[in-house]
Length: 339
Image (tube, rainbow, N blue to C red):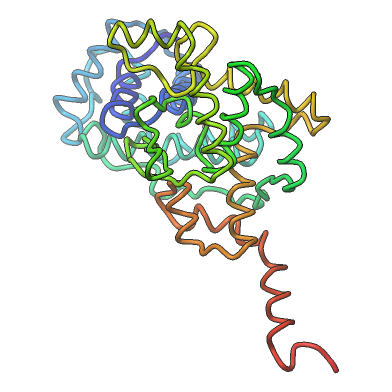
């Protein structure tokens, strides 16, 4: 299906007002286009770009004050979206359930529609929000995957830091585990985001929110070693001469690394270390949080370090530390165990 203006307007809102990532907006767009395809097929609507544009103009002009019912204008997907009620939504969700989507995928598609209609209601494109009566199906809680400290040590030892790119890779892996930053946050780092004196990194997180995260001594040493080599490299000298501010972690051409490149590097070192190939950069973030909580860190501190907006997002890790609490109880309570 060709892009509908109403969908593009919503995606622009997500990107420029809500500061969603391009990837998240892309997923929302795919879900909404699937909804549009369903409506076109269900109501036998032939897509006409000009008529879709007129339907959006009509919705903007009349929105919650009326519909196009009674006019001679041909049916449009945009008009059908605007006038959709709970029965239309339920029919679409029933259609999706027949496709054998996983519960998590279904939940995401419902969340997309909920966000879209909340926006459409707030901007007076629709008369009432049909999603208010739709519930998200309960999902089984997925345990965050974490690897052991011994596995972490094997992974961090894999890069050969005697040459520049190996030193960079060692610094990257040390930084991911030391700080728990998202890989998107890591590749966004500039050289000026390193605070060597304060032993911390300045992170620009989701929603343009900024935070400082401390660097452990091993990660700081790995970054300093990498930067010493980088500052002697012609690529750094060229950037400096041009007055450019280089990224903290460069690719082989001296430019900024991509998230995909970091994943490829991680895959390489997982093979060399003989570790589970399904381990991802996000696994290191999970391991960071799990190991902190397992060693006594409080949940609020971990929340701030991870950059979670809500404490409930961080609480998914708490079940991983139940045994530590049990051990502390058994050691401290006078009637915890039989004598």
